[in-house]
Length: 183
Image (cartoon, rainbow, N blue to C red):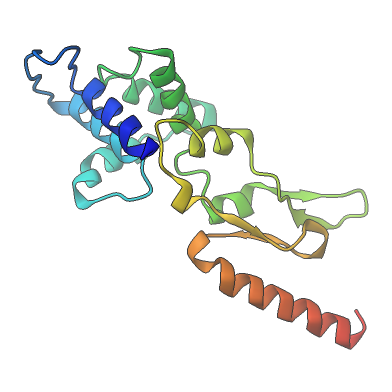
């Protein structure tokens, strides 16, 4: 219920409604797409109506990650509600830093680290930018947050929630097989 109340606040804010008698505001172009992207990136469920806004958002790409993030912030800030409150400003920052970077495949690719012995593993600590995005009060991404299977030192990795049970069973079976073979 909290999510729907917060999402309603976001939608009302995005439309520029400041009172019950406010006139309807017609959004067009990048302003409309930015508001759509803000709304769609706030939920793990994205209907087909999200496609134009998300396509425009994800098309913003630069050679350097910091420039991509800044470009996405600039795009999202075109929505009139993006900086009306400190909470919305934080949402824009969290989205620009986390959206598209907090799925299992991205985490497995970016969280691979090495130790002093030359071994590599995937960290089980979600980056702060992912936590800020997935736990923002105006998002409902709990169904899309990846889970970590296993432990880093034993070959653990991130999986999408829908695949967690199967991945955990496969991980445990592989560990049992290793133990039986003496590794």
